[in-house]
Every structure is written in C-alpha cells, then in structure tokens.
Length: 117
Image (cartoon, rainbow, N blue to C red; front, side, top):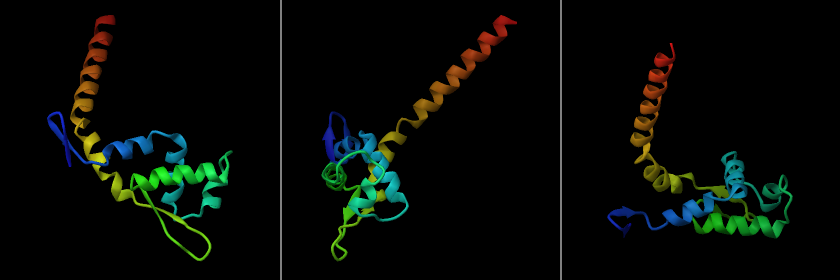
C-alpha cells in the first residue's frame, strides 16, 4: 500500500484503473470470464491486428488482471479477477455516498410531484 494524501491505496490501483479505462481491454476481460483463450481467439471479434491485441494483453498482464501461460505453441491468457479486488474495495467506499445522493434525489422528486398536484 502506498499513502497518497491522507488515504492508503494499493500500489497497483492506478495500473488497474488505467487498464480498465480502455473499452477493448474491458471487452477482452469479459471474453476471458468464459475461460482462457489464445491471442487469435481474443483478436477474432476485433477489427485490429494481432500485435495490437497483444499490446492490450500486455497492459492487462502488467496490471495483474490476466496471466499468460504456455501451452505448446500458444500462450493462452487467463483472467485473474481477484486482482480487481482493490479497485472494487476503493469504489465501495463511495457506495454510501451514492445511496445517500440517490435517496435525496428521490425525496426531491417526490416533493416536486406533490407540489405539482
């Protein structure tokens, strides 16, 4: 954990969010939920070169979100979902705020409807 300002954050949190910021990488992770896959299998639905997909895989691997194995001639990628736990934990800190904000919005909308009647 590294201390930023007054909070402690996992050292790889920035890498996780940077990796998740790209829609192609999120789609790759979604594909890997179904099981491991080779670069060719991952690249199939995308309109990009295999080297471009490999670059996305390297970003995901550096963030710890996937791992690459060696299976004869191919290097299948496998999801490491447990690595997302620090990001989920960090986001959950805001859950109470979101709930309160939505409750306040519900109250405001209810009051507005009552005033219109």
